[in-house]
Amino acid sequence: MNLIVDIGNSRIKYAIFKDGIILAQNSVDPSETDTVFHDTLINPCKRAIVSASGKIDPGFMQRLKEEMDVLLFDIHTKLPVKIVYDTPETLGRDRIAGAVAAWKIFPG
View 1 (cartoon, one colour):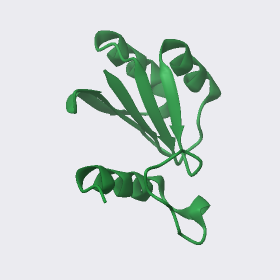
View 2 (cartoon, one colour):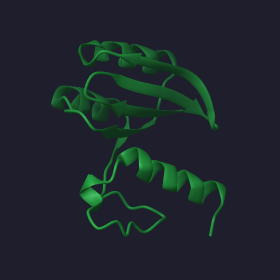
View 3 (cartoon, one colour):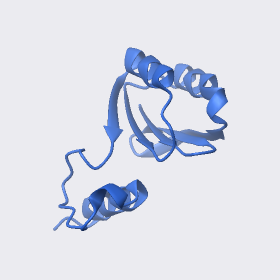
């Protein structure tokens, strides 16, 4: 199972996937990170992808890394698409993820 986490300025949104199917999803206040770990105990995850537009709590990331393999999704993440945007650091991660999803669905 895999965990996808989107850390925003006011909410942490996450979903647990198995074989491309969402098993659980939720949105919590950043102070409620224990909910994320509770759900990953019920549906044990082996890997996580974390994307953040808000501040990442170092304790949250450390705890995730203790439980599973974690990839921080940002402009430095190796991607199957080339970003040619003039200022890639200002390009929204949601747009980058959307481009990767489009590539996955329609390769080439």
